[in-house]
Image (tube, rainbow, N blue to C red; front, side, top):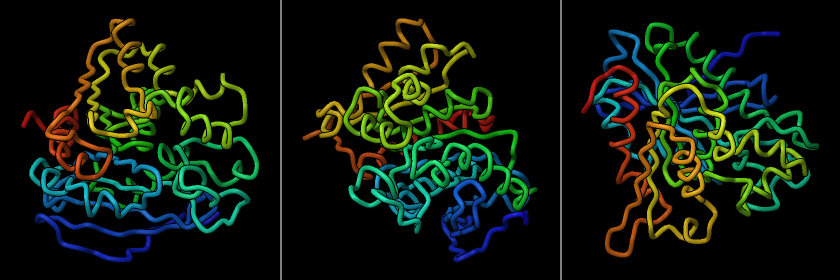
Length: 294
């Protein structure tokens, strides 16, 4: 099988670094996959650590690139940011586009086991194996494969937390903006897990951060979570960060900073909320990636 290689669709100068809009043929998904990569100016002279950002429902690699405001602080701290897509695209599978919260742009970052998604929706494999290997090979000398952290928003917050917990040692730290923290207990997660994994709740638990953290035994969590108290999805019990926090406290685990934010009418679920605290999340990653405190 031929080795996948990136095509560069655009190169954009930003905050002294370069944003690369890339695409490649994925062996994991069997489709072309888009990914954005921000290289800070420091990457011209040395390999820099890497922060993976996982987007939420309906998003593409461009959402956070254009509205998340990571690049400024990534440039200041000297770390790269990877913005993968949220699912395979162009498959036209049955049920894939029937609703905005399942199927295309709504993979929940799992490897599906249920038809018709089983063959192509292998997003955990893509995010944790294929994409990193491809990036570190193609950008050798610019990206430091030994220093990786992960973050995400909403569904991507679920992805960041669950992949961090499922792959101990792969990431130095994790952070999340308004994550779906207990998907087995909320409508979004129940719908997605049923569609991708079937009806066995024991399988769901393997991808549910609140269940996964019960078995964490690898030292401090090195985790930062931010939630807006004006977030309708938090109010509607789609996110349930309090369940995650409860387990962490019961297990006496260290290293979780969970912050609830209120200002005027309260921060909502949008990129306006996310961008308000993007600097903190870049700094959190930078600290654990060996770049020192801000």
